[in-house]
Amino acid sequence: MTDSAWTRTRRFSAAAAFALAGVLLVYSLRGIDWRHAAAVVTRASPSLLALAVVISTTTLFLRAVRWRVLLTAEGSIGIVSAFRATAAGYFANNFLPARAGELVRAYLVSSSASLDGGFVLTTALAERVADAIVLALLSAAILFAMPSPPGWFAGAARPAAVAGLLGAGAIAVVPLLEPVLLRLAKRLPLPASVDGRVAAIVGGIARGLRSFHDAKRLTGFFLLTAVIWGLDAAGAVVGASALGLRLPLSAAFLLIAGLSLGSALPSTPGYVGIYQFVAVTVLTPFGFSRSDAIAFILVAQALMYLVVGVWGGMALATIRTAPRSTDR
Image 1: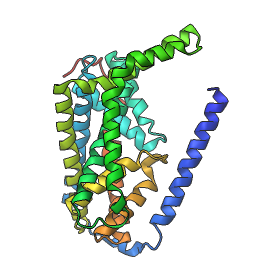
Image 2: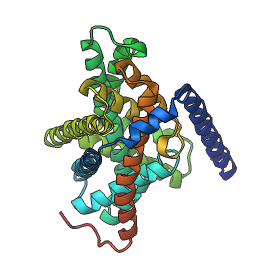
Image 3: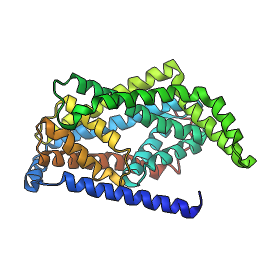
Image 4: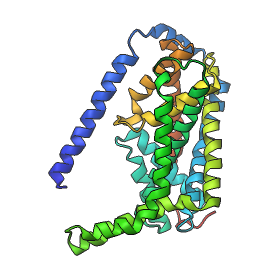
């Protein structure tokens, strides 16, 4: 792709993201009682908000530990280095478009731990896919268990389960097809230098997905995933309680699933529009008013910016002076 074509693609993607954010914001903020929303925010409990921040910080650290489980399939990387890269990546995701944070954290790890960039980036993206699989299946289970799923949830359970199973199948099968993919790549009419690069990319992707194929590593990864999403749901419940709102645990899981899956859409920095839309559509069937839902998600986003901003900012400030990753 030429530079001009790449520039046009980026401009189109940015335009689509801002257009989507605008449409979703108009829908989400329609009919909001801003006085009521402000009253909900101003009565927030500082101690419960502080607890939500602690929970969010803990899950950020556990995400770094979980990613390290995959990375150790190819080499050694310290927990501190993994946490720095994870925090910096989440920081970038919140302030840059197109999920650029995945590239940031992959670059930081591959450059500090001498790991292949394609392998590292694949583990980062596969981690996201695994999250989507877990959340899709969990959401489907919750929806199937509900006597009458509210609103658009009624038709969401089966597609969510199918999508989750397809994703799991891809992680299981793609590494087994590496020889076939390499043969197909060699048949492409490409210069020798480009052909070698394509082979390296295919190999890195296969090795990254193959990191899930070790039973011990897979078990550790999904145990940590269960803890992470359990804490995230608990944090949402605590955050709602801080505002005097009651959020059922099942609704909290559906909310974080919607936020996670929605973040895969073309988005502006900070997922403006998408988060508001998900909050309104997920929470109102559970008794939240639209104003309550907007108040809740605005506070949740502010806490997210605080946690990611502090740890990500510190990570970026220290990354240049950090020693080569040997810490454990």
